[in-house]
Amino acid sequence: MSIQVAHRIFTTIGLAAALLLAGCGGGGSSGTAPPPPPGTLDTTFGNAGTVITPISVNAYANALAIQPDGRIVVAGSASDGESAQYQPDRTNIALARYQPNGDLDPTFGIGGIVVTPIVIDATNEASAASLALQSDGKIVVAGTATGFTASLSDYKAYCVLARYNPDGKLDVTFGVDGVVLDDHGGYFRSSCTAVAIQADGKLVALMSSAPSRSIQVARFNADGSRDRSFGIDGMALAPVDPTPNPLALAIQPDGKIVAVAGWQVGGHGSGVAHYAFSRFDADGALDPGFGSGGVITGVLAFCCSDAGSVALQPDGKIVIAIQAVVVRALPSGHLDPRFGTNGVASAIANPIDADDVRVAAAVLQPNGKIVVVGGLSVSSARFTAEGALDSGFGSGGTIHAKIGIGGSSRAVGIQADGRIVIAGYATTTRDAPGDTPGQDSFMLTRYVGDPTTTSNR
Image 1 (cartoon, rainbow, N blue to C red):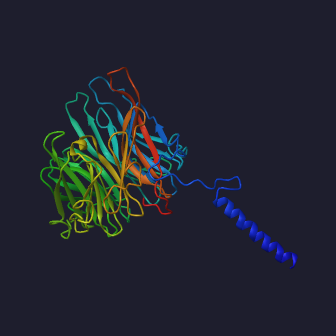
Image 2 (tube, rainbow, N blue to C red):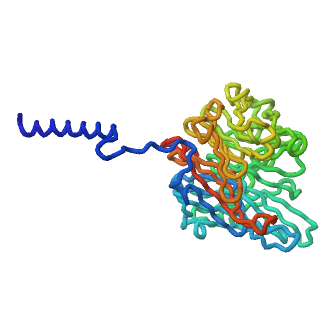
Image 3 (cartoon, rainbow, N blue to C red):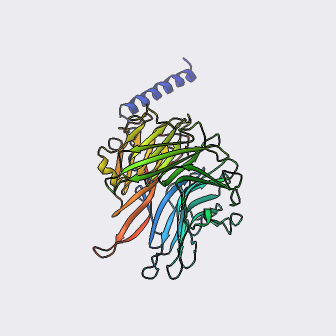
């Protein structure tokens, strides 16, 4: 036997022995530890899994988006709490951007934070409810701006849209110095709860304006002006009676727009939630192939209809999180009988518990599972693609964790590696016993998800 052949034989034997020892725990090594199960707090993120960001006196994160580079953008409001007695606190739109590991991004705004005052008459009170990312890296937020005259005798409310450059500065090519204030109909009682971006760069916003008994969707050109070719004078309406709370919208790949709204009948804690789904064609006309003339309504055995989210599956089915349940509709708008119980899945057993549960946001994993968040502190649930609670997630399919003294989860996103990022607010300090909370701050927390190489944002 030649020396060269013998070397190959002994090398092969040595490699096989090393692999055998490693598999048996021999050789002084225990092998690679198995990954933590889905729903486990990811302690590599921020400070042992959580990031708390104080902004002014109180700050509330309402929306979250994950950029293609993995950075996390959060939007909401920040209040300085310095207004005079009986005057509203000065509340401003607030954004923060984080690195994928939870550190604030120093290239965004000032130390990772942007605060934008919107002054209406003598006061300013503004908040971002929704957030969308443009393909060029610009950031669009939608929300509400309100103001009072100095005597508090007159009140005005506007739908507010603001667009930011990737560095956090307002984009002066949009609206007036980066901001659009829209008051549909001149009643000064408007607001925006959701925004999405079309493939052509136009913005679609879910609005509410008085008087109204309808779901209202407005479209804006890329420069912030109303797109008068959409609907009637830039507004599309779906009649719903009584006037619903606008909750969420999404744009289908074919350009059709799905909007979700809800309302409550009955008192707090004993009422019943109603919902309405509508779909519009790309020109703003109601889609006759959806529900009944473009609208479908229903009743849920839970109070109340003041929080919700919508996500689109690749097969055209529509996932809607509203109050304490997840609903899946077929492309026709009718509930999917193969999901949950007759199209509805719930994370709670008792409808009374729904009074303290608000499913504020939902996101689809690439494998078809559905992650929802909402309610007090950090509350999350994951459903299988069939609408059953996923027993392999957290504790029996749910997560409940308290951060600080209290708080709420309001938004969720999936990173490219499958990890789940939840945003909301945490109460970190209180004033003297019996007083109102002393400080609420932006809160981010991250949990282990299902490994993947595809992001669904």
